[in-house]
Image (cartoon, rainbow, N blue to C red; front, side, top):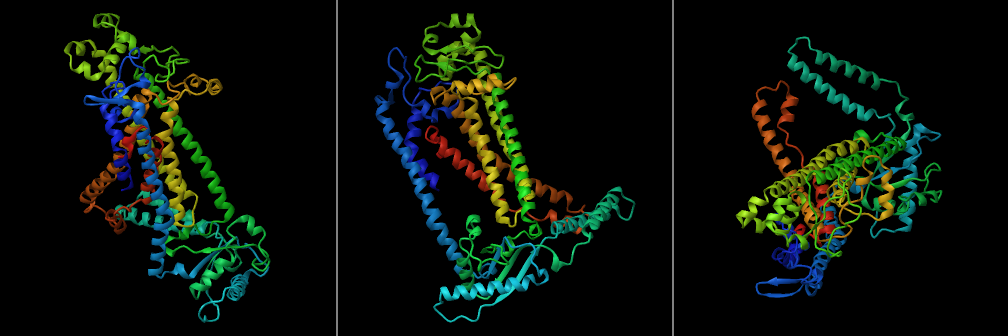
Length: 584
């Protein structure tokens, strides 16, 4: 609802943008909602575009007298968002979490998790007992430093669960369970007849059984990864967390007092997650194994993200060249695109359409010249003027075809960006699971961060860079790239000018509109597909596991929705000042 307030505050800005006609009239109604359309267009020889007026009926006033008001409206909208963000982050959410914690008693209230434990100690078989004795010693010490307001029983450790390094076998046990289900399903369809699929699955199961059957040391001699500890009361939990409050920082653990160390090793004590939040099959993954996986995932994610950005970049460059978009010039450097160092995909300098000159041409001259001259003349007339005159319609037929092609290609590029984001979501989910996080919260957090960065860069960054005219040093540096160097950072816009909103701003708004509807449409489509599968397959499944899977509804994927929400907020806050429709 906060964006409803922001939309209400910036509503007058959208209204005045819609009433203007300063932007090039290319038939794209979204352009009329950008600040590039503010004010009345007039020939630059008559009035400087910077001095243009905003007209409402027969009344008007200089635009520069209103820009301060519009700026304060946008500032107020962002300020409302920031105030709400601070209130929610530091007041509402902590208060709701505290209330929920007080109203419900869960195992989390009595449990802590101890990490950075020594993998081996001299008396490994007595590891649990020695850790219990160490914790009891710390509990007695903390009770002496933090006396309780009421009498407490003697501190006790109710249970210690050591997570040992089984070399990843816990995860393989889940794989074996799934493989056994697959074998049962295949045998049900085979109906006692020889089946290659059944034989293949059984061979996979045998290999996995052989791997699981590899001999390990006795369980009590295996290395320890971490420990889950349950105490007798919540006050002891608070005391223990307070005693190790600085241990979550590695630098402070290096300076940890000897009395707090276990067998000479500095340890970290934190509150344990809820049992339902723990991913049990990932618990026996050691620190260095998980670190290697995280480094590997980081590099793979970086490569995939770079490839997706490069693909979108090249697609956008190619679509811009194919669409033959003609950028118009008013003859005022402050309002015009860059005119220097501009080349098309073939390396030729594009034609510069000067609106001031084109308005003096006759229709016969423009039609006789054709090509860029005709396109420039039609661009100067504008979409609405051409539609209202049959002769103009006949003369500007090729321009209309180019304009439709341009809009279609731009929309197609936006769809490609959305599709790439959806594909990245699936890849990122696999990468997050490969890291073997310890909890569902850590899994969701990893997925959200990766999806957010990928979607935000693809949606709001690439298009800006494609049309950006970089400083000379950067333009010369990228010439070293063979084949595409002359296309990079040579867009027509060094500033956010009138033409930028017509080409880049409109496409950004289109991206956001498509990104708003497509993910929801995919979810709805999945519901219809699931219903259709149930109707078609309910009498044909041969195994109970298939029937359970068929009638189990998909979970609400909060991590994907949250990443999409963050992308929407981030892009809106970046571009909302110039594209106020994004607040809606």
